[in-house]
Length: 83
Image (cartoon, rainbow, N blue to C red; front, side):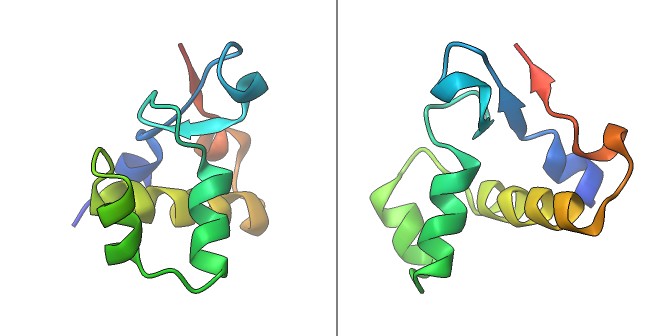
């Protein structure tokens, strides 16, 4: 299983995509969308069915990112790579 650090590498940000909000693997799928779907009770399997370019570890990366932000981890741990 990937560590949180490896999972967080899946989260990127680009100023030209969603105003620089965190996105998954440089795709036009925001972390915010994935977390919103999970919060609504949508299962990871259903999310993967609706977004076939996503991988299960992408969903885990979104939750790891949210945890890092909420837990107040070091800035380096939650800073996303800008492309």
